[in-house]
Image 1 (spheres, rainbow, N blue to C red):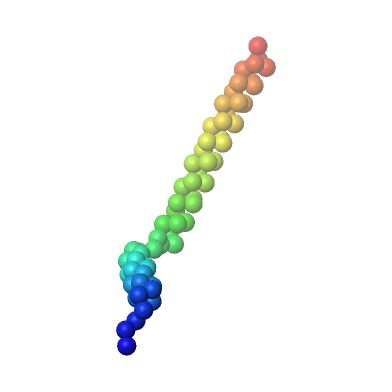
Image 2: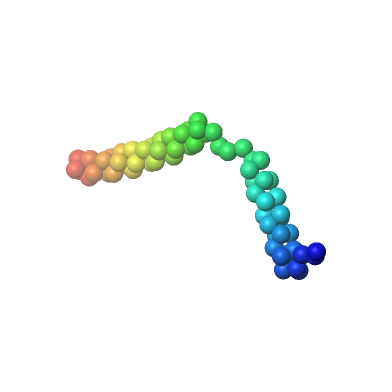
Length: 67
């Protein structure tokens, strides 16, 4: 009993997709500490930028009020 051509193509495509998924699953997932550290770093950078902008604006405002 032979398998019809379209079934054979579907089976081959399925095998390729399973192989690609297996290859992707072999890559290590980022650890919790890496994800946490990245989020902290982004937050710290944002806070530093906000503080710099606030300090610059405050300096400009106070220098204008002293004139």
